[in-house]
Every structure is written in structure tokens, then in C-alpha cells.
Length: 459
Image 1 (cartoon, one colour):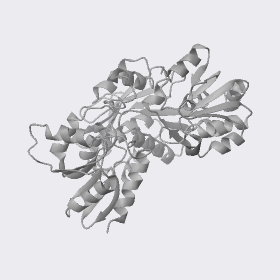
Image 2 (image 1 turned 45 degrees about the horizontal axis):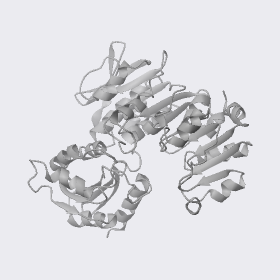
Image 3 (image 1 turned 30 degrees about the vertical axis):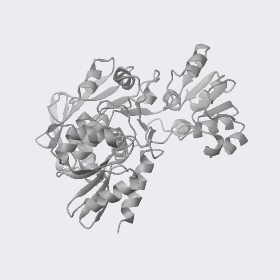
Image 4 (image 1 turned 120 degrees about the horizontal axis):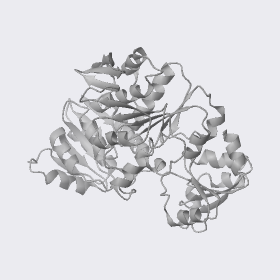
């Protein structure tokens, strides 16, 4: 089915789009331009919605504010990923016969080319971007999108059947993904995450498993051998299993042996490159490269992998080097919205760092973060709603004897300035919050850019 055919199949139906954000705005515009009856719902009030006037001009009916779902009458409902599919108004509409879908689910149905999909608790954006870069370096046409911030549905009709759609998928997107399976599915790792939205860890894992649950012959599943939960997905019905591992040799996939990446296939091994050639810092980025190459080895040569590793600078907000001032280096890891992500960030540096952490709670315990901080942090600056919880997790450890010293600062700017003030030549200042940004910022990107702005203003 083409995108045009898909639009034609729903043109005469009552269509409701829940969430007027990045992923849904192009869809709403396209549906309205193609003559569909569209109601767009959003919790925000009209004065907080820049596109309100434009959408009404296109003939879109708006339902806004606190009671935005009170009168949900629809035949087709497009759900934004942040909205649970079992909210009572949505569940009631589905019981009455409404079809619940999303921009990404519809894209999977109409995409004319191969789909490579990536999910995981950590590393999925970098791995998704790496896969895109490797395929482009191999001369392939690539469309990069999904949870990485770029919706693809409205571009489907312009895609080359010989190309690749490379998409990052969140657990929220995957909760209701029950249609077409990706040609290649990658699971970077799984750890407790988003437990402020998911009802349990079991629900979170169940959602993630949807990325490969419907795969079959001719399709590929790439899994982390070192992560017990992700490795467990090998038991799901699916396609060919390819592994990646930092700890042990695998018979099909990519592994690290004596600081060299090795590819294994059909009983044969081939050396790919030295780990030291990877420009991005951190052991977790070695895993990202292994996962990416296992996903694309059918189309990308080892030479392209090695060249990309030497030149690729990484993705914004992911251990992003900002500047060096008076011998102090500043890094932006605002993407680290979970303790496991901050764990990876801390292990990316050979020295103890000055860490800025704290934000909004996701329902994830900070016990292991406390251990990481005691072992890998020289000085700790805490801010945000979780500042006291993180402090307690550190100070309650038996091996905490006043090190690292802790500064608690309510204001985010002051926290950054405090970190700069206590830093000495040779230090690393790392923003790696271990929490979401929603106590003060719209998203982690806004938090990261504000951090960079403050750092660049330092004299």
C-alpha cells in the first residue's frame, strides 16, 4: 500500500490526532490538505500552541486544554507516543470500533523500502545514526527518523524501494506496534527506564520486544549478548539472530577480542578494526559500533566501518565536547535521563569527573548511581527535583566517607557556574543528569543547549 492509497482508505472517516507535536504536525497538515476530516487534540491551551491558527485555517477542528479528550468521537485515532493507549477515553473509543494507530505504525505499513529499526534503554540514537552514516557511506539512499526527531510518514511516497528507512523506536512507540516487522531490528540493551509512565518493568520489556516479535525468515534481529534482558529476546519468534558482545566471542555477529572488533559469520572470523580507532569516547560507543555493523554487514564493507569510526564525531547531547577553558574540559551528556546512561557517561573518562546531575524523577532507583558516583566522581553538583534523592543514595553508601564532596544548588545556571568554580586545570566537567529534564525544560535538547550556552559564556 502506498501512502496515497492509505490516505484514500481513511479519507471518509472521522480522524483524530492526539498530540500536536513534532511527529504529528506534518501528518495533520497532510491529512487536512488531502481533504480528510481531522480533529487535533492537545493538553496545551490555545495560547501555548503556536500552530493553532494555522491548523484551524486548514479546516482542522481543535480540542485543547485539560479536557481535550472528553468528547473523543473517531473512526481512526493517531496517538502521539507520550500518550498511553489505555487511557479511558481512548480505550472507550476503541471499544466502539475506532482503529488506534500512530504516525510510525502507519509509516511501517506504507514504507516501500527496507526498514532498520533500533530500540534500547541507552545508545539507540547513536546506534541509529551510525547505521545511517554507514549505509550512506556505502552509497545507499537513507531516510533517518522516528524517535530521533524526524517523522517519516509524509515522505514515504518519495522513498526509493532500493533505499533504507533507519528509525529509532521508543518503548512508547512500540507499545502498539503490531503490524509489519522491520527487516532488521536492533536492541542495544535494556535496563529500568520510563517507570514513571510504564506500569511496570514487565510492561516496558514487553513493549520493547515488539520490535522483533513478528519478524520471520529473511529478517535479522541484532541483540546484546552481554545484557540478560535483551539477550532473552532471542527466544521470541523472529529472524536470524546476530549478536554483539564486549565480553565473549559469538558465532554470528560482532565481538571484542583483545581490543579489536571481530566479525563472525558461518563459522568464519574476520578482523574489522582496532577499538582505538573509534573516535567517540566510552566503552558504550564500542558496543554501538558493534551493534551497527552487525545490522548492516550485508551492505557495508569493513573498510567503510573503519573509516567512519575514525571520522564520526557523534550526536549532539551525547558526551558532546563543548570547550576547554583554563585547562578544564566541558562535556554535554544531557541525553542521560537515566542512571544507566549516566553510568556509561562516567565510564567514558579515564579520570574522576566533576558531575552535574539531577532533574525529574522517572521512578528509577538511584542505588546503583550512588555506587557509580562514589567510584567515578571527583566532585558532585546536584540540582533539580531529585537532588535530595541522589544525595541520599550517595551518602547512604557504606564506602562513602565524604568523597566526593557534594554541592546542592537549586538553580540550574548556578549549578553549572558552581561546577566551573570548583574545577581545576585537568578536570572534566560533565553534565549527565541521570534524570529527565521536565522539571525545568521542555526536553533534554533544551537542557543541553542551555548548558552549552552557559559554558560558552564562561570567561
